[in-house]
Length: 458
Image 1 (spheres, one colour):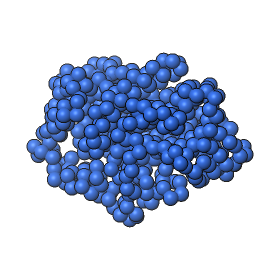
Image 2 (cartoon, one colour):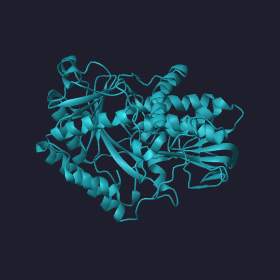
Image 3 (cartoon, one colour):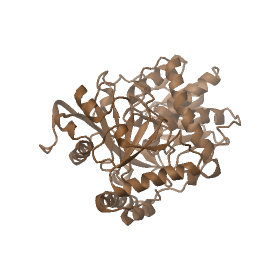
């Protein structure tokens, strides 16, 4: 590790994520022990699987629902993300078509739904609805920021939902030229939400079989080394780990995202930068960042590191390359020079699922009983809640406002075979990094970024 990056004496790299550090990793629950029959089998105990089980069991207490998890509940992206309960859509409004306005409103409403469930189930996950600030630090980023707000108006996103603001009136980011503000975002502590949901699901009588990897999903059955679950519906809720399942390696690309977190910062720092609330912070770079002020006064700061491993492999333990740690620290201290007096307490990585068109989908096939939701492209904390409620209605065969949303039943072509997949993703991010560098002295978006968008369909 370069001496330019100060590491705390208790620095940890990987070990799932910092979010488990205070309480420790949970002891996995019991494995499946033999064959089992159920009405619904949910594969994956992340947010999608837990929300689905929660809403199904509350709607129909008589249903037998089981959850199968290869590690422990919240092991994947649900226990590693940046803690953004955001109303942003995964993907563009244009690709969802005419129903995008309704989908956007449901996303906004889903934030308040999560808040309501946390209150009802006494889930303490450091949740504060403090809004989100996106900053532009170059003229090209400022132009994109203005365009994004203007485009949002055409999709029914009003001034109260998103507006341009003076960055000096909010979190003071060094070099910020312009900023936008939306109230539709809340901070959470991801692992606390995952563990709280798991408890609520178990309290409803739903068993979560942990240390139980599913090796095959087929109509009406989920196969594990310890037994087969036969069910009327089998729901795949595996997000970034989907590529591990047979015949699904090219469905959703497992994209790595990495984070660092500082040691607690003193009150003088927060006064200096004006970060007095629980606002979330993002930017308009192509190689973008995301950050939160944690409940114990740290900065959790994330972005793309080494975005993709050849063959859709996944580093399950969350180890982060030194180059990525250095890049994140450099960017954090560019945003907040006063943070240079701090040090990094933890670094980790996780994977998110990326469909070929970068838009989420939810689906249930009534003939086979197979269903899935995912492809959240980094917007999963909120989208999983909407997915869980939508899967509930689809499984129960109810036609509702949720089942008519434009992401229901979307079909997207698979990613290209290797080595094209690896070349495409890595070329995209090299171009984005180069575009960000060029845009330091450019008034408009670099052609390199536009070319990167064309390569991957972003």
